[in-house]
Length: 175
Image (cartoon, rainbow, N blue to C red; front, side, top):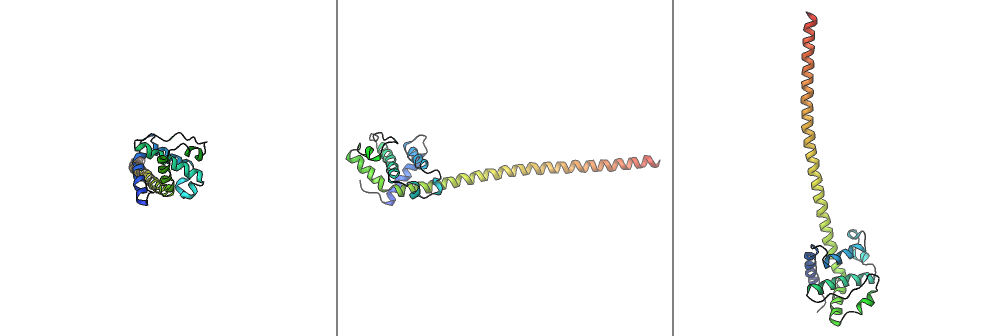
């Protein structure tokens, strides 16, 4: 397996995006790991998100494991969060290690693509939320306008009734 070009990383990422939709998918877990290591992920660069070589290696591990599973091969051996990546990497055979290294070399590109994708979806979510809020506000303004019109009509009727009463009272007082 040769090292990814940027286009190949984009294709891998597109496949990963399609798999992110499923609940508890492998790719969703890899993405969740990336989000977990930076609480303000959307607003930080990938260099800040994957701050240490250990985090970058673990992210590559998750991505490689997903790729292996998707290609119909057995999953990577378990690598607990408290284990060092060095100890986890020793469990891989040569073929798995090569796949892992290919992903390791592309973690920054994949991170940037995921970040861009997440930012786009966050903007879409915010725009949809804003649209919903605007629609809700517009509906409330329509109700308020209707009630205001009703209040003005009622007020006008009261005013007319008072004028009519004054006129009647005035006639009776003159007589």
